[in-house]
Length: 441
Figure 1 (cartoon, rainbow, N blue to C red):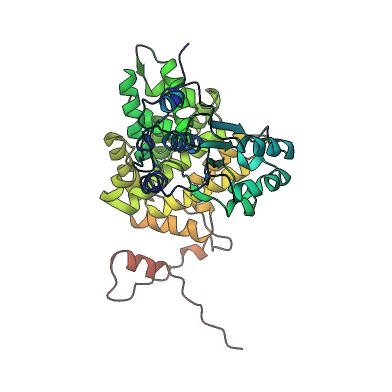
Figure 2 (cartoon, rainbow, N blue to C red):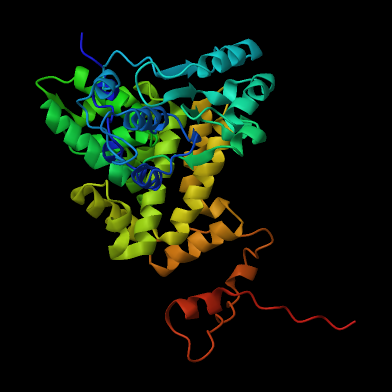
């Protein structure tokens, strides 16, 4: 039975921790200068390296080569303490990991105080790592307060939590607080590619962005997703189609079909896509989320121009070219209006009893900018008119329009734009309504 990737590739030094330089750099400097605090609080989202960093800190502090005369910021990896605390090692008697979710009461705090009174069995420090520290009750924290405030010289504490606000202030104020962050895709993506190369696995184009998106910036979650894809890969190749189907994302081709149909005002095509989404068992809300993600990318391209590639690093070159053409065809105003409608539809679809109905109504609203009397709808229509995209649009006569013999009367001359105006400015001036003269009393 194979070991999970996140366990097999767990960092053993601070240099191996990715995306947390704002934490690892000052910790390594504190180790080098010998100014290590007696208590630390590591906070941040799950899977970002809090517990791993706590273990690395403990491993470095208790390394046999790390002495007051020769402070180190990296464990040697060969002494008995380093071997015991290594990846897959048995653990050390002098480094105690406590699951605070199940040991969170006053009695557990009293037991910890009793254990802290004893000197280390072999190493320099006795280090207590409290994982899920926010689960400790206020009474339990209060029982620990005196020990955390004035611990023995041989005791160090590391609290790890996803919710630092739930750690009482009197404890927080006695620790050095280091906030961990989600790892950005431009850091996590290359790391996953290196890992797959080390595993001898080939990954298809577009797979890594799917994994980083599914992992949400969490290294552990991303490694779990990649582990699942590798386990199901045929011939050592992780294919894009299988990754899309397994992770539940919408295929890029399907998103292209939606955007192209929207640009062409092709209602038949866009509803065929909706029917395909439902028939293949896709989650409608996930499909709408993917459409919103695509609209966001198109807005970035429309606004940034040639600089968009610096923002959309995870997009293949051919896909980026297609998206440039789509953004140019739709325009910023129409893309912005579509994104607003899709974002509102996501809220409406939460807990909806008929998600397909909401999806079809959303597509109808996207196809009919004329049905939107607001500023966004007017801006979209004007933008499309300026780009010559309205074509032969038949406008129905408004109520009260003269018919019959009255209709034969010559129409008044169109209002000419003010002199000196050309292009879009002239179009806006011609469309601007004129104020009717006030009849005499």
